[in-house]
Image 1 (cartoon, rainbow, N blue to C red):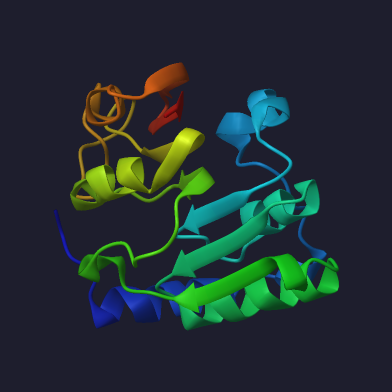
Image 2 (image 1 turned 135 degrees about the horizontal axis):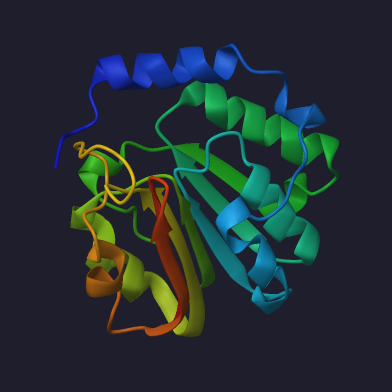
Length: 184
C-alpha cells in the first residue's frame, strides 16, 4: 500500500481549499449508502475515517450520534468543524487531523464506522476491532472494477474478503467504486 506523503497532504488541503465552504454543502450518508440510511443508528458513537469536510459526520451527529472524524487534511478538518458548528451539532462532533499511516488512533468501541473513498488494507483489522457488538461498518473505496488499477483502488472482491467475518448486509462493485455495509 502506498503511504500518504506530505505532498498528498498538501494536495488534499488544496482540494478542500478550492471547494465551496462545507457550511453550504448538503449533509447526508455517502451516496453508496443512501438506500440504507434507515439502518444507521440514531444513538451511540460513530467514527468517520478520512472524513474530509465532515458531510457524513454531521449527518450522523444530526441523527443523534457522538461522532469522531479523522482526516489527513487540516483544511478538511477545519471545514468539518465549521460545518458542525453551522449545523448546530458541534457538541456531538470532534474532528482531528490524523495521518492514518500511523494506524487508527486508540478509542472506545463505536456503533458505526464510516470510511468513504479511502482504502488502507493495514487498517482492516483495526476497523473490525473498533466496532462494538452489533456495530455497523459502511466502507466504500475506489475500485478496479470498471476502472484502471491503481494504488488506492480495491481489487475485485477485496472488501468482501477483508470484512467477510462481519455479517454483510449489502455490497457492490461497479463503475470504479466498491462498497460494503456489514454488521459486527
